[in-house]
Every structure is written in structure tokens, then in C-alpha cells.
Amino acid sequence: MLLALVATLSLVGCGADTAAAPAAPPPPATTPAAPAGLAKSIPTWLDVPSISVHSTLVQLGLNPDKTVQVPPVDQPLQAGWYQHSPTPGQVGPAVLLGHIDGNHQKGIFWRLHDVKKGDKVQVGRQDGSTLTFTVTKVDQIAKSSFPTDAVYGNTTDPELRLITCGGAFDAAAHNYLDNIIVYATLT
Image 1: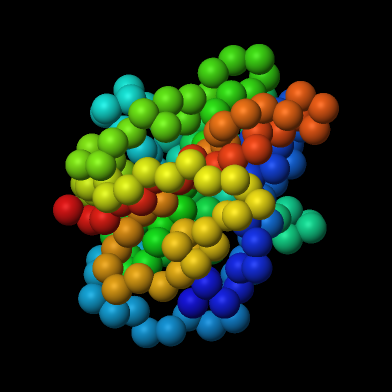
Image 2: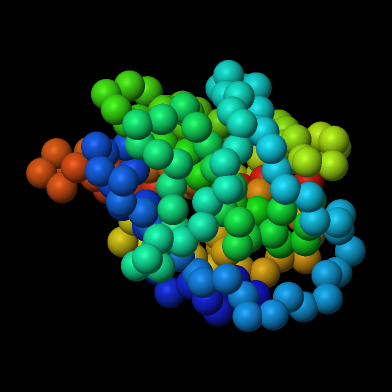
């Protein structure tokens, strides 16, 4: 569903002092019947114990230029859920974004690159449930080669994506050159 809507996704300005955002898929025109998975429930918090991450989640939409909103850079410890992706527990890839740094301090996903296959990620939902996801893969990839299909493409099970910037910092452009992407499946 989202795969066809995304041409390019890169987290521009992640952690920089400007609030630039990734290119994004627009919201789907219609919602197809949901395969097996949990009912929709807005995510409210995120824990990644292996890197001591705990954050509430804000809802993120699209900027006027159709890029994905990111949490405010002056609040680098705030993570967010891209509201045009499935909610965690629904079939498909729920997308959570956070900064590596911002406002001259470490961000919520400062250590996202340290997450390992097998690590657990917990997400609290508005319905009171807590879901546990298991990390299956961690990638660092150039923004120019962002794996749109792998991040936003349809899946047969509930999955989770955690995304931040990483790699070298281009001081002239105020931008990191890579993205760190964590892939996880519902346990």
C-alpha cells in the first residue's frame, strides 16, 4: 500500500538545526481490508532497553512539500510515529522516527546504530496494550540509496521501523549523509 506511494525517502536535516524532513508517501486514498493483525490503536510510547531509550510518541504527518514531518529538532529526545503508516500491531510497517541529535545535544536515537539483531523494542498503545517487537536487522545506508521498498513496502505481518540519521555529518549542508534503519517484527 505505502510502497506505491513512496518515490524517495531520506531524512534531510535530521539532527541539524533546521527542521527539514524526509520525502514521504501521501496518505492512502482508501484503506483496504486489514489482514490478520491487531486493531488500530495509536502508539503512545517507545522503549528500546538495549540502548536505554524511552520516549513518548507524537504523531507526525506531512509537511507542505510532502516530506515526512520529524519531531521538533529543539526537542531531540522526542520520538514520533508517522501517522500514515500502520499503527504498531497492525499488519504492515509502522514507522517511528527520531533525531540522532539536535539543539546541540544527543537525540533519542543517538545510539540507534548500537541496536543488534534479537534486541527487543516495546511500544505502548492507546488501548493500554504493550507490544514487543524483535529486531531482525539494522542497516546504515546512504540517503541517496534509501530502501523505500524495504521500509514502506507491504508486509504480511505486523512490523516496525525505527529511523534516524547517521554516518558522516556534512557541516556545510547541516545534514547527515546516511540513515540508520532498524527493522523489527511483532513477537
